[in-house]
Image (cartoon, rainbow, N blue to C red; front, side, top):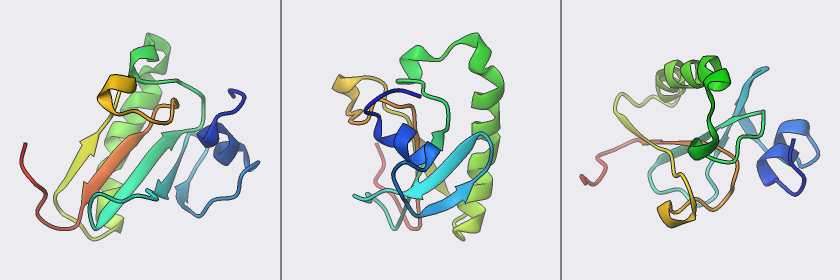
Length: 111
């Protein structure tokens, strides 16, 4: 766990949050500034600063997250969704702890 990391503090329970889901590897919360009707953040419990820091040793975790996204969408009653992973400050990453945005619940703007 990294010092002064918001998501690490949430993962360890140091900072209370309303988790939508939690298991041994990840937790899921609602984004506090949603960009869609459903906007979840899927967050690994281990500290990885960004996608730029993912190593081969994280392959199982990354696969687990990717295969879990559809389950979180289904639990939110959405059948189409977008995932976003910002990597680095210039991409818009604000919290430097890897997290996946899951957005849905209606037509999303095309890019």
